Image 1 (cartoon, rainbow, N blue to C red):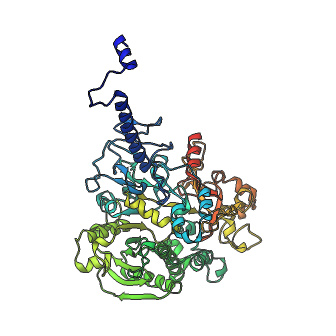
Image 2 (image 1 turned 90 degrees about the horizontal axis):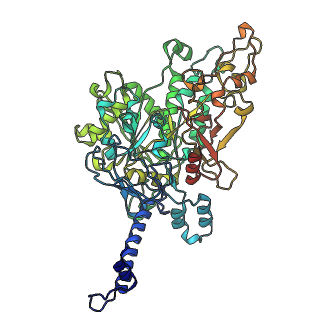
Image 3 (image 1 turned 90 degrees about the vertical axis):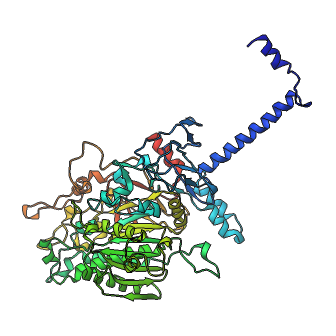
Length: 621
């Protein structure tokens, strides 16, 4: 520094600003700088998504980043990795009420900006929210509930493998749904993966929740297949496990299905009361369960028991969508008469559960529709698809999920006749009415919670694609009648060999009841929190190769060769399942599950899934 510069700093020169001194100019400059910093703080706060009135937090990295990255310059010590152009998705920027919004919403999804904003939430526990809520006055209960309801936490997308997203279900907004590329749906599973991945890498708008119980599904068909429900004897019907499965489904239908919550925004004297997802359509890609030919004769020749299984399960699937407040459910199938029969009988089951069912239309024409039924706030429709271009690909003769997507896209784009369009979208609704689209299977029960629904809607509005966790139900002795499982005594025949299910001893007997609707009093497990990048039963070269992975320890006991029942030995044969807690969802079927179908784990919690603990655990791991 020169002597002149030193003198300037010590003895400011007079200013030619109409009498304003240099000190005044400095103070004025500091004021402007403070205002700019304040504006930046507000901008960062909006990006943080920590407005308790909306209750949604968005994370794209494992670090709890308190700022954002713009043009490659980070304002924190953490610099998130910005993936290049294979990350097909929208650029997230700040919006009002702390929500992220998207830029270039109507532009091509491949137009990726270099500006990536990463948001975070505060470290306030949900327990503190409850304390604040309980101290509020009764007059402000509704507003305080809105402000202090638990946040909705998403798993950072880089903490998920492509296969973790797979549950045969997804929830997309209209734009995302119409962008699905039909030409890339070759096999049935592709209907999910085209919504998840680009170049086999998950896209950055795809999200799953930290709490599995806030958005998850119970998948049943693999479970009942492993229980060998087709084993049946007219001479000895009590050996069948079919009643066991049906009882679980009936328990869900009779005790755990409730009318959907009404959206506060529409609860007025001048407007029709609606649900949060009154403008959402759920598509059920229906394929009736059929045992293999050699098993079919065992099961039943007149299909009575087979039909009961299909129709009870379909009714449970529809009931779960009713409970979530979907405005319309479209069951898509290719076998007109058989599918219509299953649909009618499932609706008959639902009629016994819900008040004031209303039959709107009953048609048996050869067009895409056979039945149109409305129950309460939800419309039901069976659509018969006969367009081979929608159904058949080079890899699958019958691809029903693809047909469901193709038909719905064509209806939304006004590419069908008015009659066909009404079969997909309804008679009284315009194409613009439907904003959200959910795809699922007829053996998949959706689980969510009333306070979560508005937040899911907000997330969809911001361009996120939502994927439920699959609660993978497994054969367990605790779910079997005493006479239908266990060791063989004398000449008695048991429907399920004891080596083919988990014994109710040791670790496997420690089953946690999950009660997401129970009071948050520290006595109930109300959540199941994702355990991050940890697949203990799948990862590792030390495991014996087998498929599927959760069946690796199963081995039939050969009683004819003198082998005897040994519960400890059977338990020891299942080391892959030892790292997983045994759980049952009391608000679902109550059947035991341990993981997702791809080996991801969640841990029961009595306090909810607190995000900063989740992130800290991942950093420590």
